[in-house]
Image (cartoon, rainbow, N blue to C red):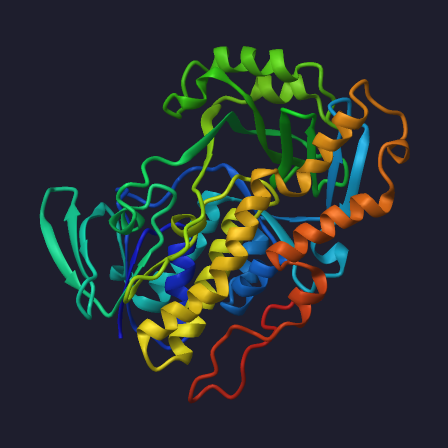
Length: 430
């Protein structure tokens, strides 16, 4: 079977490695950008997806490139604790939660794809210009940077090309641009001192603003690389993203957040010492009722782009990749496999997209502000511990990353002839 993937982000590369692991040898990933992502901003991979990367044999390398998150703390703008929970191994998962630079994760996945499938398996500088899925085998017209066009006929085509997916647009041509909610995110990374446990993720917020900080790399001399995101309703939300007028953006951020007190951190120093600040509108896509059209399907943000709450963007793209590979290896007909993949993933991702529109577990910060707009001394006067725990449990169940489910569910590694056993817990982090 010949399988073509459009998009060499986290989902596309994880799918290519997973397909090879499931027994497919003719797999190619095409990427429109001239080179793979070099952005160093951070992301979190939850234990359910770390388990899948471990089963691909990547856990040891990723642990060297990442910080194993120990706890999540949600606080008021003044640093008052609203909710704290253990994460990863500290929460009893058999696999860690990883905070990592997106560029590093992409590099690890790309190297694995090339090791498995050869250097020619990842082709950059090549965009999808047209797609014909009406017949039995999809036909894709691809255009290289130099303008040369080529037509690829394939058994299966997977659109893993992100929130602005050309594959999705081929089936939803009237959909238009992503949906913006009027919030702008400012992002940066900066070297600083370790804070709290040194492996903590801190989220602060009121009813309209959010501030997220966590380390994505530990330095050799006790410091760390801090990834931070600040989000608030902003008149620039509809303007093009990018890194421009850093001093002006600093002043804007300090007007909004200068009085906030993240535990263990000097926020004014963090913002002031960040050399490059990028600005993005907070956008997502409306859920759709169908991802699969014949032998073409969607994956990751192309299928279910969601607001960045709860660390589920990259996490769910990895799960998509593994589920897709499992169904393609388990079904004799490719079309049936893609429909089974969609049936497995689409309902859950639709629910998760809707949850993230209310900011997922971070809505406790909105509720805390609404119930105590002048602040509080004891969170017990605002919430019961059971109410807070139930919000966290419900979100984990929606994303299927609750501890019992992650640790005990069957492996997605495909049993193949010549392999003595499924690598059920390969890379398990005891």
